[in-house]
Structures are given as C-alpha cells and as structure tokens.
Length: 426
Image (cartoon, rainbow, N blue to C red; front, side):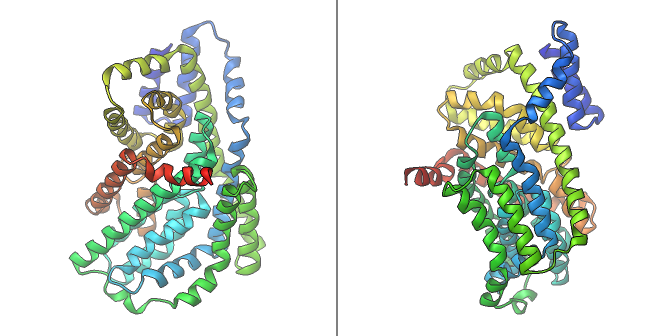
C-alpha cells in the first residue's frame, strides 16, 4: 500500500494535478491496492480531519486579515514603520520589512501580507528610485514573516497535526520572527548603502507621534490577540474570533474605511482561501491515517535513527529535505503530511516539539520565495508587474539571509524556547 500511495502521489505531482486532489487520489489508490479497507473510509477520515476545534481559527484569522486590508489598517502600519526607519538611506525598504512584521501579527498569512503591503510599498519604492526587481524581492521575502509572527496558520496546522500546544507555538514564533525581520532589515540597509539607492526617502518621513496616534487602533488588534492568548483569557481559536471583531471595530468605527459594500468581496475571498486550505487538510488527514496504519512512520524512524548518530546531523538533514520539499509542495500540505512523521523522530533525538515546529515552518517559509512554487514570489511579481526571472538574481541575497537565520534557529533552541519558558515559568 505504501508503495502505491507514494508512487501515485509523485506521478500526480509531476503531471501537475492540484495538491489536494493528488493527496486524495493517491490515498484512494492505496485503499484499492490494499483491498481490505472500504472506500467509505475516504469520507469518514476526511470529515474527521476537519472535526477539530482549533481549525476554526484558520477561516477566522483569514477573515480578520482581509478585513484589516480593506479597513485601512495596512496603510497606517506603513506610515508608522516609515516614521521609525524612514529617515535613513534605504529606510523605505527597511520600513517594508517592519510593516510586514506588524501586519503579520494580525493577518497570519504571508500571501495576504504580500498583497496588502506590497500594493502600497512596491510602487512607492519604485517611485523613489529603487529598482523594481529589488523592491519586489524585499516585499516577497518580508511577507514570509506572516507565517512566523503569531498568529500563524502554518503553526496552527503543525499544532493540530502533532498535538502540540498552539499557544506555546505562537509564543515561540516571536523569537524567530524578530530574528528573520532584523536580518532582512540589516541586509536591505547594507545593500542600499553599497548600491547607492534609497537616498530619496529621507524627506518622506512622517512624524512619529502623529503616525503612532493614527496607528494606535490598528496596534490594539495584535495586542488583543496575543495579549489574550498569553494571559490565558482565551484560546487561540477564541482569539481568532476576537480578531474579527477587533478588525470590524477598527476598520469600521475608528477609521471608517470598512463599508458595508466592502464586506461581500472580503467574505468571498475568505471563503475561497479557506476552502482551498480545508480541502488540503481533509485530504492530508486521510493520507496520514493510511500512512500511520501501514506502520511507515515507525519504519522511517528506525531508518533515520540508523543513519544519523546525533541530533545535529539529523536536523541538518531535515533542513535540507524541507528546503527541497518547500520548493515543490504547498506549505499546508507539507506540514500535514511530514510533521506527524518527522516530529516523533525529532523527539527521540531530544528535540523539543515546539522548537521543531518552528524549524519546519521557517524551512517551508523559504519555499514561499523560491521557484517553482513560491507563492510569495509570484504574488510580489504580480504586484510589481514583473516576470519571475527578473527578480531571481536580486532574491538570492534574501534567500541566503533567511537561510542563515534558519541555521541559528535550528542550532540555538533558546531563540524559540526562551519566551515559552519565561511565560510558562512566570
């Protein structure tokens, strides 16, 4: 059965069958080859895969992010970031990274961050003399903070699939998110200085107090979400509902840019995005059930234990594997298929499951900016109206920078675990 599932899955991927359909069809073929399992199992396991309370957070966080984009929140966060770092050479590019980090703390989606922030900042950077490929590269790489800074949809998926505390994963995401953001900001400032670009933005810096006052209602949203989770007032799922309410209040009452006529396109895009993710989740649940029933995870664990003597070599191998996987497989599908298999192996090496979850998510975030399946890459190119091949040379520096941060996150567990230990200890 394992051979039939894996071979058919690879064939479907190669011929371009959509991810969810590939996983579902491969599972059906495995059931037919096995011969002793009823096809009724397909509907049962796919439904059971969606019957999870934490998964309710996904459509609600997507809705909250879309409401914030339509409610003028992204523009206020851009102005605030420009007021902080906009007065130096390369400040507008650095403000793109900072804005993405702020917006990620309320949207949970890297693609939403790319369109919401990129639509404002990519044209602004080009207008100030930044090369368009450079501006698109900054936006594409910065938007991946949407899957690191909590709330993060990939972290929710990892928590559900491995039964790891989502609250702990959210706390642990702060350290890696800040590290990646700081690394990217340092990179863009250095590149701008070396290349002599980004000098025209020094006079386009808004006043800090004015920008802070304007953005204060927007900043209350992540405070409500994260503060409520970390203080124990509500669960991450309940926080997602609070985020929707906060987005409606901020965009509709404080800024008065979220109108009734805006709600239909917002709800429509939310339903489309949620449907795609949920279909992948349900298909992956069936796939994971069959793989677990066949005993393949135990076989893989035994093989890996024989191949790597230390956890350091194991983690290096996992990083290399996931870097390749992230280039070809959508993030949600990769997490739901691989996390239940790899996490028990990592725990046998003494790796904390929360730390391992951040390693997986940062790895797969890199896949979002690398061809051929880099969703952030294509989204940034769409906003900048550029072909993908134009920005690849510029993007290389950003990929190397994020990879260096990944190595630190992998081999310095305190980057992820210190905030968790501090909050749990206190």
